[in-house]
Image (cartoon, rainbow, N blue to C red; front, side, top):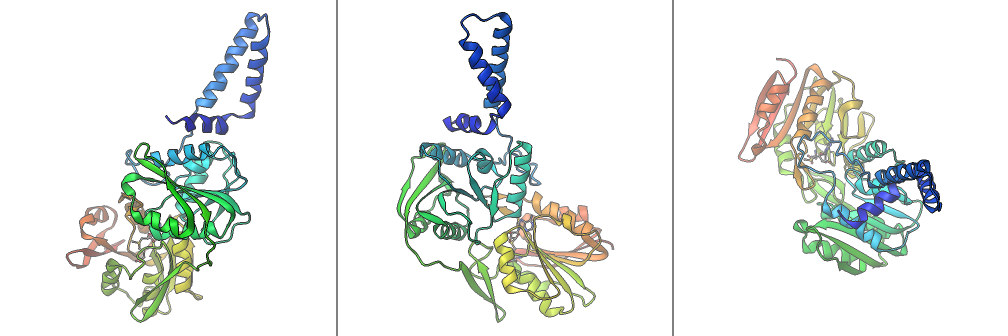
Length: 411
Ligand SMILES: C[S@@+](CC[C@H](N)C(=O)[O-])C[C@H]1O[C@@H](n2cnc3c(N)ncnc32)[C@H](O)[C@@H]1O
């Protein structure tokens, strides 16, 4: 266990009642002549206190993963906390970026910090882990809005998407004091020289720590004076220009699986209420709305930046955007059609339990006459899982890479 664990736990777990017990323990320990009662009370106080200090934070993943090997934090998170301790000073305002299940934020809950989220599932995990550990959650911000207070320190788990890393650095440099320091950690197997290149675009001084438990921490200091960018890329598809924030799925062109899906999707004029699930920049919803102009289209994505991008690409009276990671907010038997290119990559993990959970929720939200249509990489082999959920599963199209399925609620 790292030194930081104990220190952080001291900070995070000593409640006021244990402090008063410590006081009692120290008082009694100083008495020259202790009676048996004093000694017992002193020991009880000491053991209670130590049990509080040693208590680990209980951080859960809070996603639909049954795979026990998928841990809610890594050596890179712990190394980041220990480098924070090494700074030896308590900054006025800290921001924590890309803390997937709230481990960093819960560990630093005594500091004045702001949790900069991109995903709704991150927010949800932080709230649930704060509740589990009886901590008050920090304040929140999305990664494109201006922060109320300028930062002196930013802590970050470097995301897999380096475009998102760049967007985070853009946010930090335009919301911080001149002396702001950034500590950003990663597992060494995920290192690419591009990480240093991007860091050096924003900071004069970029240093890399030695490796500890196969993880490293980058320290960035001396921010460069740069013009603020809008962090938006553009891409063309069928004579329409789509905009998307850095870090949103498929930045260079519309994803090939999505293109294949749009060529084979089975749309009916009776499809009046439609959900574009995991909508990304909204291309599927937008293409459907051009063909079924009277339909009401709902778009939902776990990513704040995806939803902000979709708002740039598709809007109107019949269009509804939902920043969410579950269909719990939708009534049962609502939709005629749910269309999706579902997620299965979550940072460096492949986890099909999440899309399967979403397919089950789709079944609940479809009208009896409704259907789910999806595209998937062929190797994922969703057919068996879809057959377990839906009454009828048809293959609408298939090539060497992708399969398009149509899953009907009833026959
Ligand atoms: C394969 S991409 C598809 C994006 C877009 N539909 C397209 O075709 O370009 C999957 C999307 O799922 C989103 N996502 C991941 N988990 C999700 C969840 N639980 N609920 C909704 N969206 C999710 C990701 O943010 C990502 O935008």
